[in-house]
Image (cartoon, rainbow, N blue to C red; front, side, top):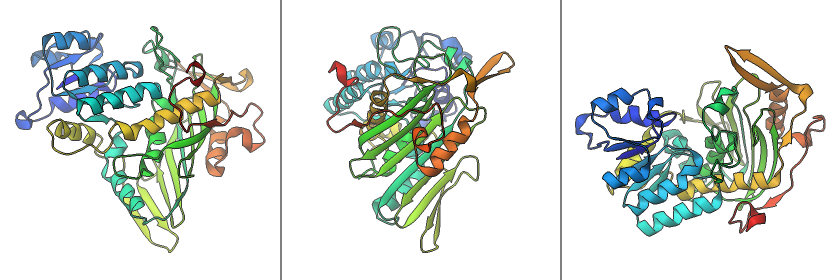
Length: 400
């Protein structure tokens, strides 16, 4: 296998491979990173004589691999996945699939043409907890889905945005769409999960049909740091999602999935268990979706060997991309939050910019299933337009 990206989250894959037993059948034949010094295990990789390459193209000039694990920036996912597939490799691409739906479609088409598996690294999808929940939903055990809600407040200091040249950006330096924001990066898992559990099969997700979003910015970045999104799936199930990097304190993820026979809840700040409370008084515990976070890697290895399919192939991850593209179309001009509610707390030289009262607003939104502009008492809130995603194939649609 070859690993693209060994700093940041890619380091988790490095650690997984390094701790694998000698007889695992997985050999790391190269790593790709223009700044390999960011990897804390670089010395160990060198001791094991793992070649380090500046680019994926350079790797392929020197060798090949059966599996490419891609843990690179969002705008690199499409070209690197296409290169891996063109060279006969299976691929595990980290989330999100890509910046735009046209990039995601190109990746899907390339995987189909190559006849090689292409997994997306939404780790919750590979967990026993989510798989058990999804099986019960597919079997009709919980009844008809009515509304799914999720809240994730994950504060990020300014260093989060200065750690690379694409965080918080709309486009990369070379003009590729990134659309980096919490809904398309740090908390993308939890938006994807709502589509995933509603998918008509084990390896597919529900498709968003319409979306309306409110996108706000408190930090000095191009894109949003706070999002409130409502969409309806093609089966007319309501999905509402609230996320931010601009609260003073962390919260979640927490979710409430409402069905006509049961309510399914999860609270990362509580017991970390997915629990279904049935209307007849029964209770079912599915477990912690964060357990087995490297199941995705093990499944990708098996799929590369022709031993089964992955739980989250690219087609399962694409609805999240479609939803995020629609959200950006819903509010193409990010709404700046007023200066009088923005606060800055300095923590050892790393400022945290946060919004006074934002946590309470998003909690109220989550509780009521309402967007901030619908609460009626949030002075800075303003609605985005409704966007029809049926037949949507290109972001931004105005450039189609």
